[in-house]
Image 1 (cartoon, helix red, strand yellow):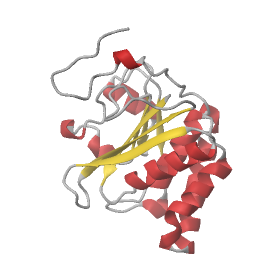
Image 2 (tube, one colour):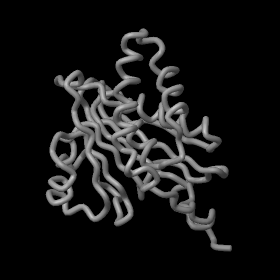
Image 3 (tube, helix red, strand yellow):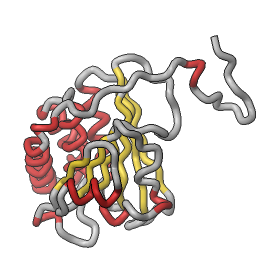
Length: 212
């Protein structure tokens, strides 16, 4: 199973990124969960979304505690403890940050054990709250290595269709650019098996599952 968590601020397209990524996984034959989580539901407030994808039925529910990939659309959230960007990361977790600083700078700054990649902030995306969702989805799609560009782009076009052709084309071009930039790292994020059902927490408060 792939476990992917995406972080950003309201208005940056993080919910959109999870929907694009989830739809692209589904087009490739995966079972999928994707959902956003909000704090204060307002523009600029920290939010995150998650995507689970597997070839088999998914039994896990709730928040992703041990992500295989974390994608951060707003680098200012990384040092904010309440945003939880680094919650649950492990040695195998890959990190992607939308930043013009190099991956080496981020890896050293965070003492991050796993691989770190960066998405450059394109000139057309500059602004107080750049819309980076499609670029984040493209980076994640390339890193898992099981999503074709055609599936990614079809999902993007469907998700953004209501915004008009100009917006769709601009975001499709940016997503293609990121997808190609990340080509050397395709498949570097690998599936981690789902634990047996007896190892999952019981959803009922105050109860535990009996093994076996």
